[in-house]
Length: 212
Image (cartoon, rainbow, N blue to C red; front, side, top):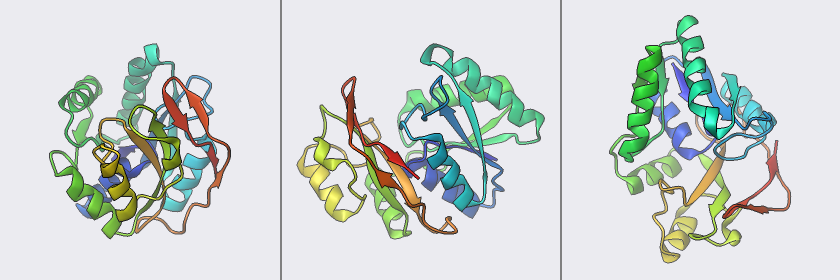
């Protein structure tokens, strides 16, 4: 299988479950912005995702696209996976029906079988499992209408979860309240060392600029 890879906690936990269930991972698939410099979902630099893949002992696979061409490029990548003998995709969606329906539709076009290991499990349960397994993730994007920029760089742990709940959000972040980057855990051969730069604000979001 390939894993649809944002670099964050949910795609990482989905990868963990797929491997634990006997799946054989072949690649991490990340959609990039049209310039190919940063990831489309979490604005992570390509080099950081490559470092994650290296420490997971997997091959990174990239496609670049503008938002209008996103689906076209995504399906093209799925066809390439199919041609190479990889016919299963693993996705980290939890409970938003529209997201899973989109995945099922585009995978159907390319003959890929979509698997959602986290689907309909409790959001808090998944958070606690992620932490309990020993994975480490840091907040790199926040929706400024949901959280303040002081959350940037925080590690996902019980204290941060409590602070997010106090701020009035669901700490799973499933609705895009924040995004993370995973740097360590049971799947990693060694931690990914990251460096922080000054955060940037763009179209209602704060982004912590990070690099490996």
